[in-house]
View 1 (cartoon, rainbow, N blue to C red):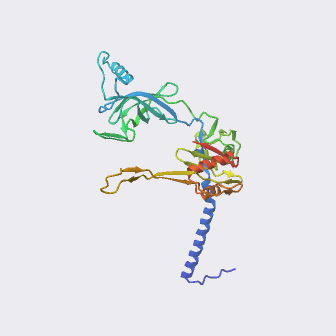
View 2: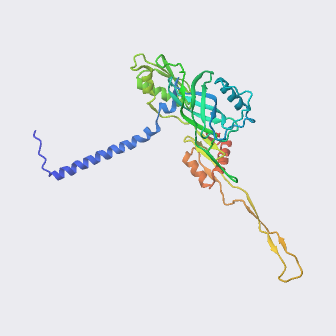
View 3: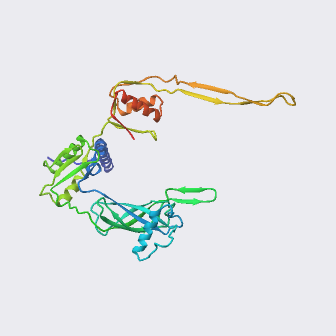
Length: 388
């Protein structure tokens, strides 16, 4: 059977091709929009969990900062600074025990740092410097050699370098201006790692995954995602926050390659029904799964305003009698906000319905905190309230 020739003009054929292409693009766009919410809601395993052995370690040290411009510790008020300076000089062969050592350009500081996982000997890390005594400014100082110890008392790094301070102090005869915290500074790449933490991933036959927000549902979803990806039952949930993964012997690349692939898997975390309240700032955060049963809400405040407007009473001009006196005038206003009415919140309302109902009362964040706590006390809110 022969194919009939296309007798349409080239312009007509181009127009039909452009129309077909536009229709295909629109269909693809609708498909992407339909799939977008599910993709956006899912999170990578690496964003919601941590792996066994992959962790930071805290380091701390005590040292001296020298070279300050008269803003160091007062040796009379901070004797430990003087003793530390004397001990350091003695280790360098200088005897100052019998001298009145009281410089004002030395400050005792605490040095803190975080040792990243699998940091190797010879690599560098940043340190933070914080004044310990009466020093007023660490600007321009130099941290002397300071050993950095871990929780086990072992020295893992040694720090030294020029202190960088973000704040400053400008002082005059009648005014002082302070920006930031000049008694706190930072030294980039100041500490050299001298000792490594012994830990090898390749020797592990199983790995534990810890959820940052423990939850039974989220833990099961992570285990199912791993088993589906590997095609075998190698992951199981031990508790709400821990998933145990057995490393397949035939997996190419071993443990490191397995964790690299697992951390890219996407899982939709489950959320607790929770309301977080910060009473200091008036901040309220309401979770998506918060539900409220049938409840009637009324909000109103009793406001009493007292205004004093004293008036001056004085005799007529050129009068020889009478005295000038201040006559008090007091005005008291009572506002009971009688215009406020009860608002009924229907059972099982969503977060948006709850917010709309509270906004309908015209209340601010402070009053909304009291309302939420009252709803919870009445047993009508199926959520946990966490006060920060």
